[in-house]
Length: 406
Image 1 (cartoon, one colour):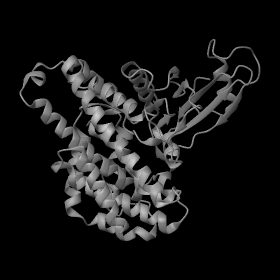
Image 2 (cartoon, one colour; image 1 turned 90 degrees about the vertical axis):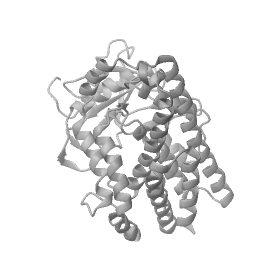
Image 3 (tube, one colour; image 1 turned 90 degrees about the horizontal axis):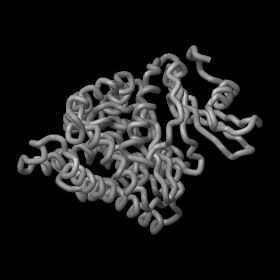
Image 4 (cartoon, helix red, strand yellow; image 1 turned 180 degrees about the vertical axis):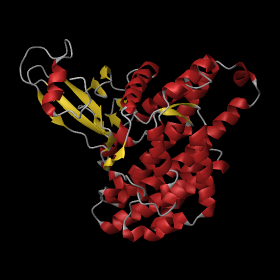
């Protein structure tokens, strides 16, 4: 079974059987295709007798969300598998274990995380995850620092940049996040109720300047190996455990893009709470929890990143130049704020949305959430180059949301 073709469930079972020592005995295996993403087939395979189970993820040669008219490279499966394995070394326990990668079939076999929930769903349902900020800040600090010029041999890093060149999936990001929302693009998707908001985006010259500057960094600044799509749909979670999945968009880019993606998705849920909680007190309580999580994600990340810099920094001048570290961290905060705003805007008017908002049944409440998310996103984009603290992000989110819902 070497020639590439999309697998069916019977073939997936056959491959699972060949994984040496994983499934004891010869009893029947259960298999179901569970992929609800845009780019892949995902099979869950389990042995009822032993309770053993695994996940198989196969890249498709096109974007499933659009169809065969949008072809995609299968090399992204290699990138994802190698990124997962590297992340597993740099941030142990925070990604699923990879059992096998089959390059001919663009197939990765990995740990089953069925005892976790997708974080987006968990947040929609009002879940609270006391260890999340600790876990995710460790993940982003370790993976970003140790793949950057600060934390690894700089010549080896240059070789890594080539290894993780990912032009086709970067092109998706470049278009869907940094271009389409700001023009009347064919791929845009939004409800007629907020057409005025979409048209305002298309005509906001100040906003376009800020997005262009952030886009330039995404195109040119190979700071560190990014996950590239670090939203709450790419995180499996329980109150005790956090696992980051799906790094198929991995490439070398600006660090703030990953951190901003995490924060943006917490704020998208913040904008949507009226659609999920039953009274004003519950809304406010959960929104406060989300904002405190945002604060902790940044502050814990910054503390850990600075500690890694002091202990493991590879660049002499970066360690000794007065004020350089502080300047670097301020620029990183500003990038984080700007990219968080871009990710929010894209999820309201761009091609692929978020369930936090789209699944709100009441049309008026849904529209209110969309307008609040856009207000926060635009405000963060315009704030980014003037920001000096995470508190400004939080205050901006509160103010913009309140004004949109007034």
